[in-house]
Image (tube, rainbow, N blue to C red; front, side, top):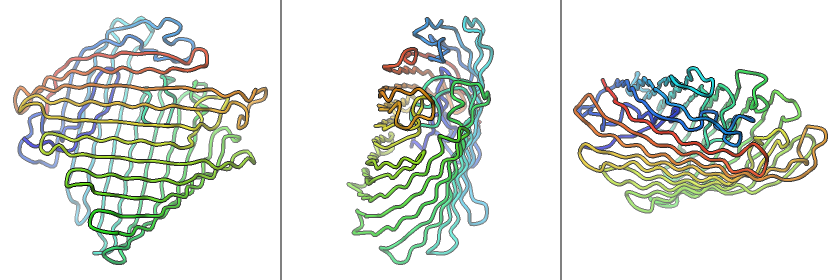
Length: 399
């Protein structure tokens, strides 16, 4: 049984695997897939460090019940290839000691590509998440629960191939981060980012490609003094090590202007992907760059990130997914702070989460699944550190 692409969404104590994953019982290809799962679990810190009610203040654990519905579609509309993945997860707290009722975590991703000619390709990608769960692999929101928020991210590009070796592209992206409650702990992060970019690529050989890239990001924040303009000047190298292994490197500098202050910082991003054949895949990425500050005292932070994901088919019926995300932040509390009284002191923070998911196929429709997630933030600022563990076991029905 071959393993197809999978997408995992962590939703308060459970891991949702896209219905396109054949491990849930689908053997024959189909354009439309769906799944419904029900599970029970436990969350030892549902507040997840939200303000003064986090783990440092003695967060209380609670049992959870999770209901998730997913739907995916893949097919062609005329000459366009279209892929859609969407789902909603509901988390109930039947014996909650944290005054929580029901949490909703929804997501949707739509991607499309259209070959205008043999030389010109148009692509578009729109993804959106809405819920209360933090995403430690992204700088979209806080690293703790701070109320429901929307993260909308989209990118549209056109690539033209001048020859077998030379091509270039132009792109436009827009990102919106918005917390529902204007009084939320994370509302100061509300913003809209527009990114304009272009690159020039040259294929050196069948295995390697070099590129030069320029991007301009304009950030319009709800708090005017957090507005910024950032330019990216990057060089890239793509190398196919083997049929199964591919490495990508991007390195350069960022030039950021904010509150009449200009700064230049290094920028690096790399990824390594390895195919395990029909049994699974391994992916690793690293990065170091300037990001939007996630404290009220700092509008920017230098962040080092890394992420690792592994999917593996242990046997014909049993499969596993492992994920790890970690980032280290260094924030300057005064140089870029729009708030009076900032002392100029720096702060550091480390955040990581580790997840493990297991799926056992009973038949072509039903799968037993279990998951465990550990999240932790270690900060030198009071009341920002927390630790959280989530467990769940349930049944998935696919159609």
